[in-house]
Length: 375
Ligand SMILES: NC(=O)c1ccc[n+]([C@@H]2O[C@H](COP(=O)([O-])OP(=O)(O)OC[C@H]3O[C@@H](n4cnc5c(N)ncnc54)[C@H](O)[C@@H]3O)[C@@H](O)[C@H]2O)c1
Image (cartoon, rainbow, N blue to C red; front, side, top):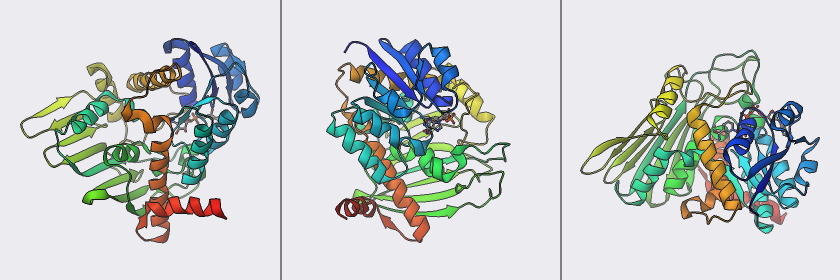
């Protein structure tokens, strides 16, 4: 297969952005059909491709090799299952699903049919993040003891409440902004026991969704190592960063102030977050106008240049893998859904912890799936 034909499901803010990248920046890639219950006709006209009237008819087309899924978070499972049933490779936006069990079903069928199942965890394609991983893998900051991430800000009432603010559709901040949780687990392995407190403390009423606006999570890992993560829209002084504390050094990846600091035993240096100074400056300027790191795009806006660049990198990676590129070790769990499932398992455990007011073992979530399979 030298060329890859794509179908895109969900052509809003992100799906449309991904489709345009395939058209303009992925050599040998072509969007041949789109499905969206609201705007597919207009997008199909613009992309000069077919509009399909339902998910399965898109997934079963013989001229489609891979399906890109960018529908709302709660609507990823159905297209993944249809795509896999019809032997199409899958690129699915994050979070791939809103429960461990759903992730598991998606992985089971894509694996059984020997398909690539890549999660859109785009943070993995940020240059500064990759460089931080390299520094860590080379042992330059020693062993990781602790990570702390914040993705917080303030949300005012909006005229229309987006699906992104509704727990049933987005999962709320913890699932919708799963990037930081996923990244920390990429560095530290899967969390073993977790605990979360919080709730909806300042955003009740019709003009808001029903998601929790303040979530304070603590995670335990093997070898006596730990992480804490704060998410939410009830923080007037918002932040967006990940801090990695090692035995010999530390790394700060500040995605709000756009500042990446690598501190080792003999030096402290700053590296770029994105591909160039221009992209870093663009992100810095955009974030200055926002209250922290909880912004979300809407269908009328275009993705910023730094995001466009990393979307190009991730889609080209997916495309190259479909054309036979051997997956780098770092990315194996990203391309079979297992890293995405591990992040959702921890998110499920945190959710249960908040609900039942207790510390939860992530194995409990995994065992629930085993029990459901038996009964
Ligand atoms: N990786 C990232 O950084 C990033 C950034 C933004 C969005 N996303 C993800 O992309 C996905 C889409 O988000 P968005 O910002 O484009 O939202 P959006 O609301 O702009 O677009 C969603 C689109 O899906 C369509 N849709 C609704 N129900 C559908 C269904 N059942 N089947 C197919 N399509 C359906 C809507 O009509 C809309 O056009 C989400 O999973 C989101 O988490 C990822």
